[in-house]
Amino acid sequence: MTDCIFCKIIAKEAAGSFVYEDEQVVAFMDIRQANPYKVLVVPRVHAPMIYDLTDEQAAAIMQVAVKLSRVIREVSKCEGLSVFQSNGRVANQDVFHFHLHLLPRHENDNHASRRNTITDRATLDKLAADLRAAFH
Ligand SMILES: [Zn+2]
Image (cartoon, rainbow, N blue to C red; front, side):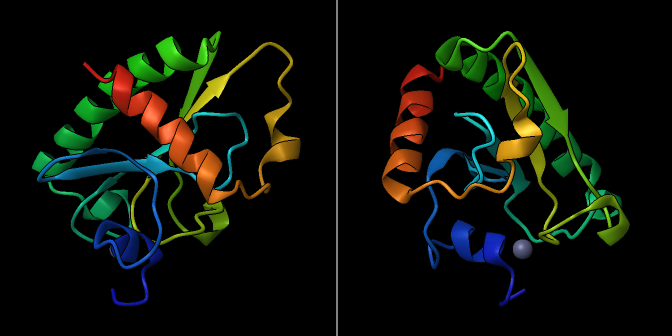
């Protein structure tokens, strides 16, 4: 767990641009902004994959994801929103701490070509602040 980058972000030992936090769930900006306002929703406690979530964590994560999706839609003016989550190397899971992706989508956005672009921290902080300000 000490080498888990998401645990380090949650513990504020690594940089993170936070959108939402409660006792169970943390949401922060993905450093790869395939489209602006892409957010990751994670359990506060380390759980590698979907199989490892408790019922309570699963419910809390989805409730936050739904609320944040509405905020992302409002702020990003997206026409659509992709929600995805990967488990295991063959599914292209990159960080082994459960994370749900919320990706705003736009007509012809071709997001795959921008998937690996790392966004600078100042921009991530600004995007996170926009979402926090709109969170009801
Ligand atoms: Zn972790």
